[in-house]
Image (cartoon, rainbow, N blue to C red; front, top):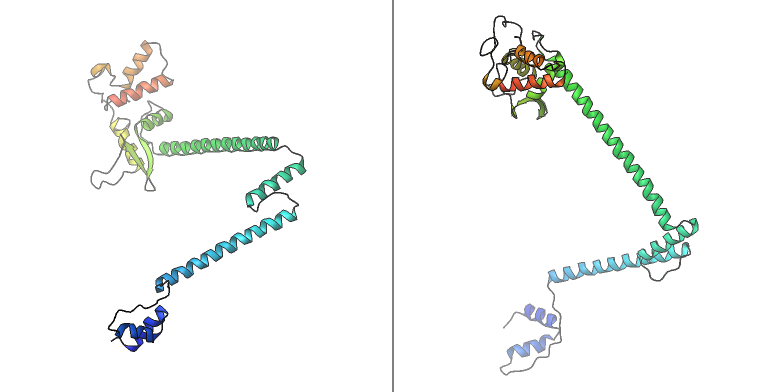
Length: 276
């Protein structure tokens, strides 16, 4: 036999009397118990139903409010259109404004497009000019920095601009992790012991020493192969050889062609002597 409070709870849930339930449970014969149709919901189901009811109420209220706003705006501006959709209100209001202003929509759009196009062109030109100026400023700053690092004992075979051209073709000054570093052949030039990136001034000084562009200790030294000789493949070993070659061909040594030849000789011959 079930406990009294459980019988009461079951009878209440099934919406029948306790007596009918007890009789059905204690009867030794098969009997029919009339139970009304019920929708039994758990606590979770009730919570979800209440939440959905609130959402539906909010949505319905929002829709009603929007329709009321459309109606009020329609009456305020004396507009005529069917329906309560905001899109129709906007369309009717736009049509009225254009009509009152006596401007054809196509002409208005055309004028607007012209204004936008001119603005875009001006902005584009300004940005292009701005970037060009910024690039020139950065290039000038870099050149000035490199010139300041040229060794004081450099030989006078070339002027500073010529030195600068060769250095910029051989070394790349870039910024990594917020610090300027020098790259040679795509790799950062590092201290062989600590592997820390070398300072720009150190790299340039070392480069001048490698190329024998330092005046000190150069007296009596000649490029590989001796005086008046040339390296493999006819590559000049000394600046004087290259100068004689240009003179023999009647070419000027003041232009970009001579500088290009010097750069090529330096790249092909690490011992190219700029002082001989």
